[in-house]
Amino acid sequence: MENNNEIVLSKARGVFRNQNIKPVVGDNVKLSINNDGTGYIDEVFERKNQLLRPPIANVDQVIVVMSILSPDINLNLLDRYLLMLEKSKVDIKIIFNKIDLLKNDDLNYIFDIYRNIGYEIFLNSNNETKNIETLKKIFNNKITAVAGPSGVGKSTTLNNVFEDLDLDTGLVSKKTQRGKHTTRTVKMLKINENTYIIDTPGFSSLDLSFIEDRAEIRDNFIEFKKFSANCKFHNCFHINEPSCAVKEAVKVGDISEYRYNNYKLILEEYDNIRRY
Image (cartoon, rainbow, N blue to C red; front, side):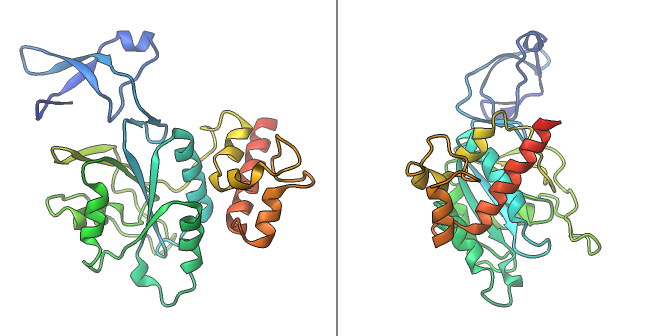
């Protein structure tokens, strides 16, 4: 725990177990300091938001880092993570990394998919320095969680943007084209008085246990909201229902077919899980 700019090794009191409260990275707490300089957490103050995976709280934004190649971009995984973040009601930005590996403009449509939804998009290559100042500004005066699959360059990007950091970095396996887990724990790093970064472990999959109700999937594909008011049925799930404005928007290109197909896959997986 940080207390008056000092790090205090702290434990949570046992009473939290009875209250089903578990302090997480980012919590604001009331702390008692022992004679030996260690501390006890007496109270966890109300959280303005909380992410489920990894468990962190009180962030101003989450920056999702995805590589274009090595490992190849996985849009289904990105959409699952965006679904979880939308449910947590946090500000979301996306960095598409390793753009120096692009040989042509074939993947520009991916950037446009998420830009058109309304997400703030940044393109980055860690082999260049031209984007460092732009990236530094998006972290300034905020508590930022950085998330993404293993091997996409999260730690390398942070090391490049903030020269005083020395985070472990890893290579992508040539055999599996998956990243190796170099960040294994959630780390909260203080950049300056008002700027903190939470570096989170990479992931290669994300199950749907964070979804409590089927409607959460539909409601957190946020581009659907603009069109769903014109669906014939108030509770339309945009699959088999007639006169569905969302399906029509997909047909004419106002909603990305990639995103819509991922929505159907996620909804089908959730239904199969609930069935069994």
